[in-house]
Length: 153
Image (cartoon, rainbow, N blue to C red; front, top):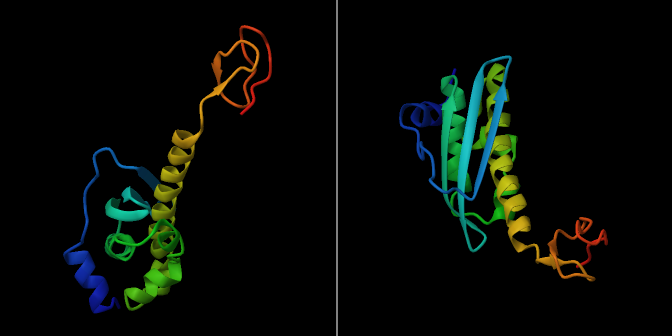
């Protein structure tokens, strides 16, 4: 029913755990089957230097999480975002039709962790904006509270 590769990743999953001070965290779940996956990523110079996961679910869900973590580690952010559900199932040597949803969850959780990182990165890179009239620090889209002027970059 399951490929040897699925069984190997289920019996000895790689990269299980959490990353302290992760750059991104993504969680997905399937209420129908009860599987829950959380991925943590650490990104250095645009490369996924570390990927960890915790999964509550069936053997296929654990194997998928393990495989996704291995496929993503060492790739660029752009490359990791291209890991598809089909790629994961193929790399595992296939999954039974009733377990294909697990491969969807794994890729989705990874993508959410990377998206979380990208949102944080954009916020950190956002330049300080000051009111052009009174020099109060504000967000670019905010209205300055002291003088009611619209913020600008």
